[in-house]
Length: 143
Length: 143
DNA sequence: ATTTATGCAAACATTTTGCAAGTGG
DNA sequence: CCACTTGCAAAATGTTTGCATAAAT
Image (cartoon, rainbow over all chains, first blue to last red; front, top):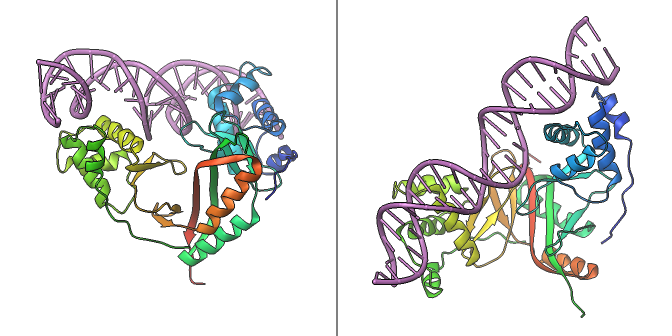
């Protein structure tokens, strides 16, 4: 099991190559997602974007999220009981541990779990397209 | 890894003991959840309940879901990109594989994955309260 | 009888969409 | 220029809630 930092990729180039126009709102939103280490929801992204360009609207945030998701630049998470939260796609796939008391999200990765998932799917006659593994926990007091 | 059938429990007795009134809508809804092997959403539960008592409302379905969830009689699932779907609590915990083409849900269980989850959480300094593991896949054609 | 639950409609929260105006390549 | 994108307001979804009435114990 490993935890790891994330390093930004150049998705602007990537998108341009796919024929996507790089507009001011899109550049701002993409920048926000690249810089952040957290998992903001649409309103939070709007809030941060508004500081750079007050005219950006919530619909543009959502439309941009859909666009970026389709091009693999971000991932959408629907953690239990709340709005979708977005995360810039880093180098490595990872899963999440959500602190139920603070809402903090900790990223982790386990190759062994992934391998078991593949085995299970194969036994059931399926190919996995993607998965979602979320641990909901509370910080251990002393020990 | 195992897949398993579910056997109904007597939650009516359980609820009564907790001081919950067993009303006609509640009995009907609980019955529907006990009988079914699938994972219906609120509208689908309403649809099935309406066949037995046309006066049942959607709010009662939601209120009953919340009640049953609080008493451990059912579990609420928020699969990607859709409404909550509900499932009667059986004997054993299990996870889900969702067929992305049909929406079918297949239940499975892996003690090894659960064990790995505990190890991961422990390393990160957390106690797991609950988790969510969903595999999204497509039926394998030939092989 | 008293407390709790219900149905209805309205409120809420999140996300999507139609359309006229604006902008990027 | 011309197609694509935006902001705005309105619609669409999924879920919760206030309130007067109905039902359970």
